[in-house]
Length: 168
Image 1: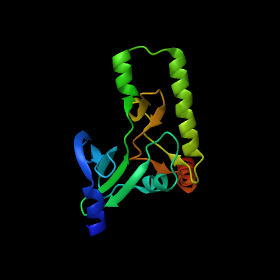
Image 2: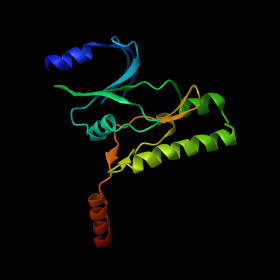
Image 3: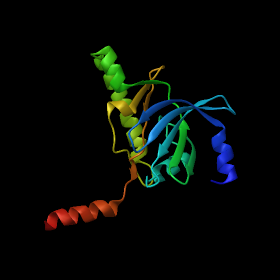
């Protein structure tokens, strides 16, 4: 790891582990230079981070801002904005039944986020839409997180898949 990467990473202090699935670990970290809370993801060296690189250069509303991306010897690191709120999974568990109008509003907000992703050039496909990846902020804003398995749309891949399905 070069000195510049080491210096940038040294300003982040791990506060607590959010998750660990055996392949990747996610931490809440404090940026000691600004005092902001962020999320640090340690992903496998084989992970495709091209969507994270695109989102860092061209942020999209209501997804976490990508702050840093590093490739280290044994893993890759993404540091992104921490979204304060409750994921929809937890909200469903604690609240039980949700008000219909609220669900409609959140669904429309999620559709707006997906529209922005799909209108990117090339379109970004999230591939993991689920209640655990939808955060409702304290002020009621819907945010979409976890772009680890997201990919850029490739028309040729779908076309080849279509052709193969027609042959078989």
